[in-house]
Image (cartoon, rainbow, N blue to C red; front, side, top):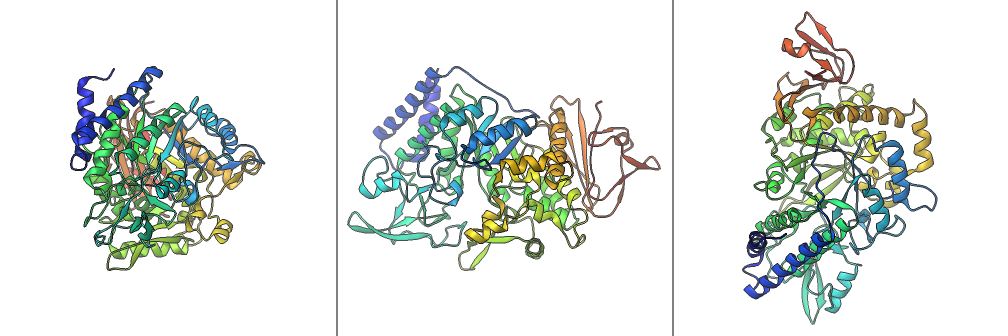
Length: 575
């Protein structure tokens, strides 16, 4: 039941966003609309809450990551998941499955529909009966070919005043860009010339959140998704949501207030739901989306992928160690979502302030040698900079200056994932990473889209045949990663909020300690980042611990730990 205090909280958030734009009467109207949405939902839904645990793990995929003949691909994926992945993952992130005009689903035409070739809302609901489902709310922009934009051009609802236009006096000199195309598009509409705002592409027109009707639409979309089985919401490109004249048009206070309002709303719903912000930004900006434990429930740990890959390629833990020492421990209800690979690429903005220019340039040169393409963003008065490296994790880690023949590609790959899986937070593994997938050069040649190198789609018969044979690359990678995930799920010290403490073993070794919330279990996670055998002095009490990954550890003179090239060990004090 909503209390007067709850309603005052909703009103307070609306005031923070719209007080200078709306009258008291208008704020009354939108407050009442939100209250009625919550009341109606709770009337229809009994209370259902679920807490995160060490078993909380996520697989990231497209609705058609696996396909077979003319069958609806979400059903095909569900069958594959039940057979091969359900024992290791309890949540599935389906990347946008809505009708879309471009950007592999991120130019959404209609959030209320499922792309017909993928399946239906019933298919999403069926998946949610045995696994948590995460879905995108592509909240910053909408397709130029969607109903909203068509109605915008006709001054019809829904769509009227939904899109952001500015005049020639709007100062964009400080705007922070994630892409390198032209930001504004001049159009003549309603007998006057205006400029459409396009942060991500000419086909993705930014929405106008100064119009509260747009916010209400997304609250309704969120409710619609919950009704169809979605309980985790990825707020795509949320940092760019609010624009103001003469500002950077990123991370503005109104954006944070909108997330706070959404957090308040989900806290008042009977069904347990989670908000995760997608903010591919420098570390400090990314962390700001936790707010004071009142914004995102989870944030992507964007600095981890580039720093982790760099550490393995250059056999040096210095940058990774320095970063993780300063990374704050999370509080209950807040979590890092840890990942190495995504559907896009390896973001470079999160390295700002963490890697100096020379180190970054060497990193990019090495990635280029390994087959990376690069996507760029415009920088005011400085041309452009690399925004992300477009490459699969397998290719990124395949060779290094220290291992030019790729002799240790498997060990490097598995240990990188072992660090990610054991790090504080929730592990998320991109579907293709489960099988060590290489760059899809054929798709890139066809589309010319850099990101397509990392978006390979599997024929069901093909991947099943690969997994049946023990010595195929796909089977080896799959079994190694499943083994790590299986171990994780049984360890209280790998709870997402279990504490983490860095351990210093020098630049060739990376280590940290995890301690369970009840203080009963300690796990020491140690990885040799080099292609040489490493010997390190270690506390004797650690040498008496059990290694969770393999039955033995190699010890010398009862005080030195011997690690094979790129070996990871997890030492636990519990049996």
